Length: 96
Image (cartoon, rainbow, N blue to C red; front, top):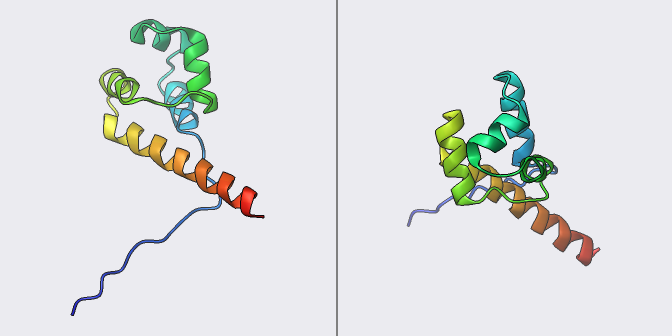
């Protein structure tokens, strides 16, 4: 009988994927206004992504992949991990 090991790592803190987006923009000297124009969305929408108030949807992840050259899977995974962290934190706060 083979026993499988499940990764149970759950970090205490997970940053919004928007922080990674902001760092990437800064490293590449791309202005928020420029990214917003290329994506066809408002600067306010980009600011909401950066702050973590708005989720990075699969479509936004696809666009970021095309514009920044960072695969959509990376953005989708960062978003999923962040939202999972928020849900766990909220559940823990309710339990306490």
